[in-house]
Image (tube, rainbow, N blue to C red):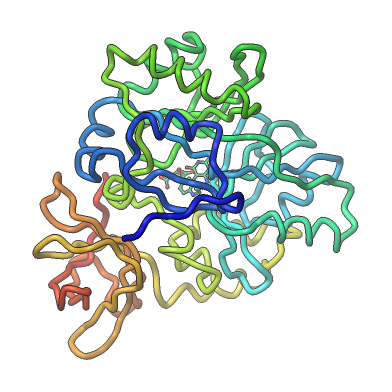
Amino acid sequence: MALISPSRRLRRTPFSKGVEAAGVKSYTVYNRMLLPTVFESPEADYHHLKNHVQIWDVSCERQVELRGPDAGRLMQMLTPRDLRRMLPGQCYYVPIVDETGGMLNDPVAVKLAEDRWWISIADSDLLLWVKGIANGYRLDVLVDEPDVSPLAVQGPKAEDLVAKVFGPRVRDIRFFRFDWFQFQGMDLPIARSGYSKQGGFEIYVTDKRMGMKLWDALMEAGADMDVRAGCPNVIERIEGGLLSYGNDMTEDNTPHECGLGRFCDTATAIGCIGRDALLRVAKEGPVQQIRPIEIHGEKLPPVDYAWPVMAGTIRVGQITSAAYSPDFGVHVAIGMVKITHWDAGTELEVNTPDGPRKAVVREAFWA
Ligand code: THG
């Protein structure tokens, strides 16, 4: 592929210098920002992530901040997940839907205080939707994108590394909770979360001028742990069943089709936009749903269009993410499959750019 032309529209991050010094080999664009995708190779990065610890520049997980007396009310209007029991210090994975129940984003909501929230967004222009709702309903809330850039520390040695820099109190942070820490005068929320199944933390860096100071401090503290720059790894995240908005689902899909029905409390999420539409799909159930799929044969190229999934001559779904997994010895994939063919064990065929391949619906790759 050709190189990408830098410009002001394609935002660099507070950690871009560190990423470049570490020898980043490729980027993607996410929320109009650079997101590294490969350092050594997808396979080498994968093995390293599963055995050691990596520092990820995930600044592209931009925050939509809600601030003011109506912040909580607005947050509940945006998601069908019931937020009534959510406390400051908690993070929730929340589907965000439009008035038809179509997925607009699948962010992590971070409750900083009753009147202050961050929505840590996936790749869609959610800020515009949220500003539109806030203004259309005349809510008493400020909505903007603050100077906040998440830096993730992921891998089995992540806790030891983050504790070395921020102290042993990080060990007490539970999954999808955060606590506040200081770094050179900056107040930072650190959450136990991240876009991998290897465990780790996300540090929400609240002053871009401090980005490289923190990057360097983590690299230095991790020198004896084989710390490396890394990034969300396509193989590991498919094995883990982590969805990618814009790839695995779009505004054409309901949360139930995405397997996110467990994050929808349509009966109790009063005031949520799209609730009526979701009440209907929750009752009837989806007729297609996301499934883990294994694909056999020689190594395939990255998925840059939906690969048709066939049962004989009938199209019964599509593959939206796939990568060869060294640990499983097959391609692990994520696809949307019709109800008639979605049971684990169902044998199918995928029309890949390299021709037809045998495939099997799986229960999960990750236990
Ligand atoms: N962290 C933060 N912001 C993000 C992401 C993140 N924004 C973009 C993108 N990732 C949003 N999408 C996801 C998808 C999956 C998860 C988090 C964000 C995730 N899922 C876990 C799972 O499915 O096993 C846990 C879900 C749960 O049980 O609550 O972590 O990664 N800050």
